[in-house]
Structure formats: C-alpha cells, structure tokens
Image 1 (spheres, rainbow, N blue to C red):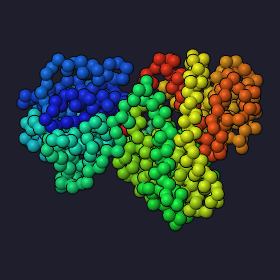
Image 2: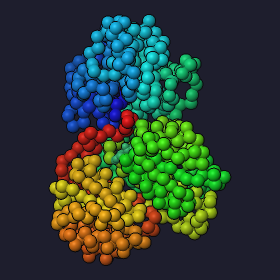
Image 3: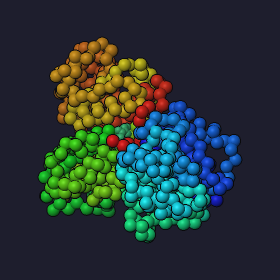
Image 4: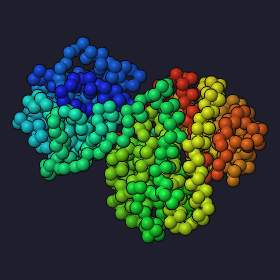
Length: 614
Ligand code: F6R
C-alpha cells in the first residue's frame, strides 16, 4: 500500500527520501516519486513501476544525474486506487502553478465534488486521474503564505481517509503533514526531522519518534516538530523509543526476507513468551487488564482478523474454548463488519493484526466498540491504529515483518493466543495447575523445537523440487490441524500462484474427494493424537485414489508412513500446541516451491503488506 517519507534538515533530501522509499518497497507499490525544494522552487520527479518492474530503481535512475542540493522534500510509493499506475498519476502531485506539492495515503471520498468546484471556480485544469491531486490544488487556493493554515482549512473540506504531507515553495524548510485514519509518525533526527507512514523507512536515521494521532497535524522544520490537535492547539507528547533495529529490516545474508523471517521464528517465539512469564513462573499479561469479574461478564468472545491473522484466530478458538470454556466466534473482518453481528457489552472482541492497520479489521473493531464490546488486540506494530483503539493490547514482539507473506507474525500470534487462553482459564479455574504448568513448559520449549524443525529445510527443499510443477495442491487436517491446512494453503498460493485448496479432512467425502486422482498432491496434517485414527482413514481414502501424499506428523509416528509418499516430522509435544511447529514445514514448502518456480517471493503480484483500503 502507499507509503510516505519526508525529510527536512541539512543533508541531501533526495538520497534520504529515496532510501526511505526503498525500505517501504515491501509494502507493495506501483510507482514512486519525490518532490524536492530546490533553488526556490519545487522539483517533482516520479515514475511508474512497482515491484518486479523496476520500481524505485526507475526513479533513482531518472534522478541520478541531477545534482539536487535540496535539504527538504517528500516522497511516496503509490498503490493505485483512483487512476491507473502511470507517471502522471504517481505522487507527489503539484498544484497548477507548482507552489505546493503533496503526497497522500488513503482515499478522498468527495474528490469529484471538490474537483468540480476547483475547476469551475478557479479554472484549474487537473492533470492526473487521481483523487489525491485535489489536495494539492485545494491547499493552493487556500494558501496565503502560511502552509499550516492552508492545510487546516483544506482538511475541513475533505472526506475519507487521508494522511498526507505537503510542502510549499514559499516556506522552503517546512513540511506540514496531517493524519486521518492511516498511520503517520514524526521522526526526531539530529538537526533534522522526518515524517513517515511506516517506521521501517526511518530505522537507520532515528532513535525516537512521535506517534501522530488521528486529526493531528505536524509542522516540521529542521530544528522543530510541532504537533497540533484538531482544534489547532499545540500538543506536548513524550517521544517513543524505536524498538526495532535496522538489521531486523535487512535480509542479513538470506536470499529473501520470507526465508529470514521463517528462520527468525524461534527467536520471535522466545521473545513473545519470555516477556510474559513472571517471577512466580506464572503468566503476566502486559498491556491486558482482564479480571475474573470481567471474564464472568463475557458470554462470548469474537475473534476478528484477515488472512493469516484470521487463521491464527481459528487456532485461538480451539484453545480458548478448550481451556477457558468461553464460546468463541471467529470471523474474517470484511464479513464481520457487514453482518450486523450480535455484539454487546458482554462480548470480548479480539482483533488480530500484524500491521494493526488493516482497514477491515479496524472498522470491525470500531463496529464492536460502538456496540459496547471490550476490545483486546493482538498486534505486532507498536502504536498502530488497531493497538491505539483497543482497551487492551497484547504485542507479539515479532520485530518487523517485511515479506508480504506472513510467517513469524503468525507463530507469535499463536503464542499470544495460548498465553491468553491459559491466563483466562487459570483465572476462571477451568484448568488445573498441573495442566497450566504443562502447557506453559511446552510453550517455553517451542523455540528449541522450532529450531529442530528448521533443520529439515533441506529435505523440504528436495520435496519442493519434485512437486513445484503441480497444478494444484490440497491441504487437509482435522481439529486444530484444519486451521493449519488453511494457513499452509494460503502461504503456497500467495507466493507460488499454484491453485491450492484447504479442507477439513472429514469433509472430503462430502464432495471434494471427487477431485482426487493419480498425481493429485495432498499435504496431510496428522499431528493430533486424539484424532489420528480418523485422519489416518481419510489419508487412506485418498491414497486409494493414488494421490501423492506428504504428511506432517509427530516424530515416532510410523503408521502414517504406510500411506504417505513423504513424511515431515515435528518434535513430540501435546496436541494443543502443535500448530507452532507444524506451520514451519508448510512455510518452508511454500517458500521452496515458489523459489523453484522463480517467483518474486517477498513481493508477490497483486499483494500489499498492509491492506489499508477495503
Ligand atoms: C498472508 C498475509 C495476509 C495478512 C492479512 C492481514 O501471508 O500476510 O493474509 O495476514 O492481510 O494483515 P494484518 O495481520 O496486518 O492485519
């Protein structure tokens, strides 16, 4: 999705901004551009081309020979909404006379109306097909030498989601930015300041930053950051420390971010668990204030999320219901928000989101909040919108996840759900202390076990070499394994583009088994001791149709070998916690298949890391 970077200081703005834009490439984009304050004017350079088509390299090439000296500027990576990807539709957009330039994330819903007015009243000729150009033209007609005032007047006329940054030719060292619904941070540099929509753009430049709230405006010069509330009153705010480091956002010798992030899972899980164990060996939920009284009040839990985070929610349902005995509904956010769900003040609403900015998840959260629900979120990005709008926040502490395909965020979301389930169960007294201790020690053992699973990467790579040309691959499982089947299948299709389908194994005979024929490939998750005989029977049925079967099972399971062409084992553990381990072979399998097929693994086609539009 779109990204914003801005710099005002004493160094060359062009290099810093382009470097920041490169760090935002992972989010997905189709064009990029910069606006630089150069010799008393604003110079705009922009180029179409996203991941896989030259992208920011096109822009870099276009400006390479120009010796810009500008020390203030703004830049943008665009994900087209209004108007196809093209040079002219790329950001920044300048006003008709080049006095103002802006970059924008979001959608101006009333842009047609504003455009009509600007055309009729001022005779402005628009050059792009975008909604965003309206912002530049509108600020221009309201500008009387004070950008801050013009922006304040302009936002009163706009509707929609709009976070943007503006510069004015007449105020060469100033950036004015405004936040509405999509993220914005103000980075504190040394004799310089930054703005960005995403922390990763600034990791190498800043240690401290301000989170900008909805409706707030930031006015930056090299020596000052001024934050103004919606009424125009200056706000004093403590800066926050950057908790991610630059290495976390670099490939560190791995061929892809996805592979690096898969291998980071032991560390990420370790971090998520160890921060939550108190001196007495019991769980301490930082950021969550749930009491027994609260729990007694809730008659149900709604877990709402999208994509991979939704799949984590499916596992959450099993463990919370089983351990804490509270009914749990799980919805994809885009459905939840439009189904007028039964939610009230007796509902605990759990939003799960890596980015914390997924629009459907955020809107569902607001819907539930409006109906009185208590909002708890499991989020990776500190200070993101979902986190800020929640009553309780449980951070996954997975570090930055750059690859579009989510891996370590998923495993840490699972860990958070286990911790939450155990905590609630303990408070309610629905589990024994022995069980509590046992599951907790299983969780503590997961980093070492995950490392053992990662050692099977070579074997999985070999398997991928054999199977990468298949047209379709099915994933099946029972119980908690069926949730893993969905996630494994999503991983495969999003990065390898192989048609893939996941189904609860017991459901096969109600239709889908009709598709099984010689050479059909099936990944069978058979990690649940409790359901193993049933699962075995399902795999046998498929084997009878001569499908190629790869099973994921606990180590020591000899029986499954009889009906499988290949078996990947995970270390022995209790049924409840297998997902933390069994997802790893599925992630590696998807990765190696996509690599064999030569796909753009970290930035798959048509996908963005953070989906901030509907
Ligand atoms: C798949 C993937 C997506 C995200 C989904 C939600 O690998 O990454 O399905 O899980 O877009 O994103 P967040 O978690 O940021 O809300």
